[in-house]
Image 1 (cartoon, rainbow, N blue to C red):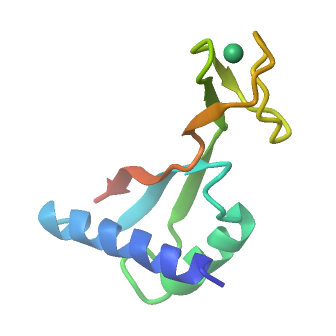
Image 2: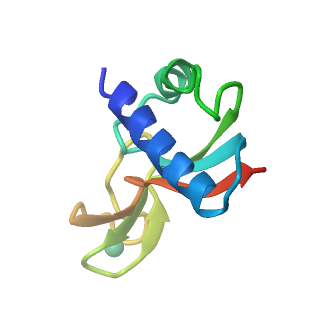
Length: 113
Ligand SMILES: [Zn+2]
C-alpha cells in the first residue's frame, strides 16, 4: 500500500514545518490531491491516523482537497475539465490532449501551535 509511504512523507513535511516554527503540536494538514494522482483518499486517511500515532500530529486532521483532471487540447488550445476520464476536446473533438492538472500531491498549509 503506497499510501503508507505517502502519509509518512506528509508527516515528515509537517514535522519539519513544526520545528522551523518552534511549534509543538500539529492540528491539521491541508493537502491538494489530484484525481489522477493514483492515491486513494480513504486509504491515505487511514494511513495518516496510523503514522501519526505517538507523534505531535496524533489526532490531527488531514484535509484532502480533490483536484479535478484538467486537459488542454493540442489542436485548438481549449482547456477543459476531463470528466469520466474522457480525453476528448469539447470544442473540436480532438483526442490529442495534454493533461495539465490532476496529478497534484502537495501539502498546501499546516495548522500548528
Ligand atoms: Zn480542441
